[in-house]
Image (cartoon, rainbow over all chains, first blue to last red; front, side, top):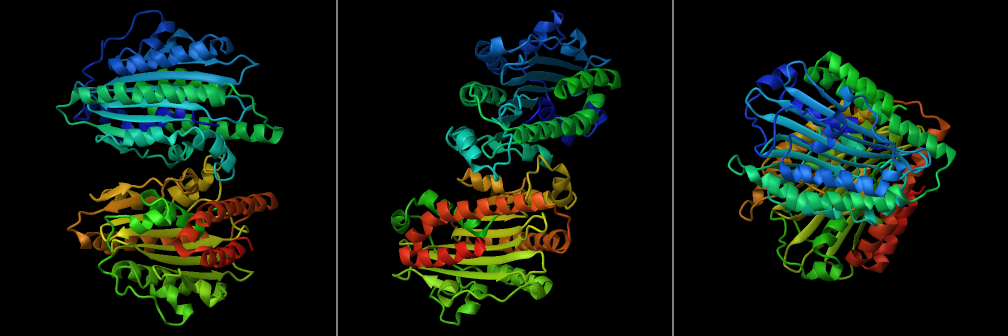
Length: 317
Length: 317
């Protein structure tokens, strides 16, 4: 179980859909401006394999954080992971008129490791107003040979002054039925202090996904916040990413490495089967219902079929 | 499954404990004033059976709401319920120096009904500053012959200008593993609109219990809010209770009657056993860990032993 990148992109795209229910309305939505600190706004022409980790459309502090998280994963888990073997036109894709770009990056774990998948993605969608929406996601999934939580971070930047952040170790078991699981992974690790710290910042507010299913997927100490600065404070959110979100995200990934990804746990056959079932429900529900609706609108049916087809195969493998 | 009154009082008392970690600190806490609209502040001397439904220490709009909720339960479920047979000194109790008062009210369902328990309680604790804390809870639990959610409402009023409200149909199954359950009880009933409505009011903020377990118990559409008015706006929270909370609470109880308490559902033997186990975990965890620590501080060991002993017997029956 645990959250899939798909699930997060679902919350994401559904958030876009909130203010812009269809691609049509997204095209004509107002009050959206591009992220001023994006280093470049044109499609990349480097080799596909490198496009994901360039994070070309996001602000510098977010790009630096994502590169550091990917580098930590390489350092800690690299020997457990196969290389990314996605087709080039799935590693990087765009819509026919060039207003939407996306990248997918997948590294599966070798059979002997606890890692199921490392899955990263970003999408960049220009808005008719001249602005853009940038969504960046990194998820790490464990196999059903362990019941430990997964890891996920997602940035949804709808303008230089508006960000939704989802950052969590989503549980893979019912926390009410398994309070010892809650204790080991959430209470003993004191994860809630990160949420508290962020929510004490004046511009940070709790964020409620429009999907009850997405809300149900995350832990009670999940960071689900929306950060809204004034229009004349374009750098404020960049500063918050650099000074607050970045250290928290790195510490939470470190906790995940130490407590979840590198510790063998006894999982019985019945439990493993239920973990598989729970994972599969999340993956299928989010691909079919959420991404299945949003991707065709954002990228056109052909690109959506190609990318979602590969994603479906990977997540159901 | 589902939340127990104990669980709610736990969040409650743990909230008191937040600003006042022990009874000692509670005694000397500052900036707390009594609810100005409390109709009377002295212990009751009426017959014990009637004390619970008098709600003697809370403001008029809250008392009127609680009386209406109890009356609705009587109307809709009265023939399914045994009378309250608690000992008089558990139906009403106070601490040795008379600064803390409490009342417990329990009606169990007859064997043929879906109702397990209706459990109400209130506590009133004077503060040295002259103020008082009032906590009022009403919970309705179903049997394991159905898997439908329970109902709970809790008011934690720490001053005339400060209220925490918890209002929910707490789920009795893992919503990730059972998305059809989420759909029937939460999406189709559109419960989330009530949370949205309340959170649009300027003085209403999301509330995060200090207990991750308590947070995990509630549904993704739960109303968990804190309402803080300015010191010169003593009537503002009373107005919000009357104009907003009261209609929402009555509608949510109606939804619970119609969708949960009066509909037979097929529950297999394994599922019923897991429902029993989940219910029992919540009840025991909250009694032993939370109330077990707080009640002796608030009421003294003898009263705590008496009330919690009866509560333990009821919840584990």
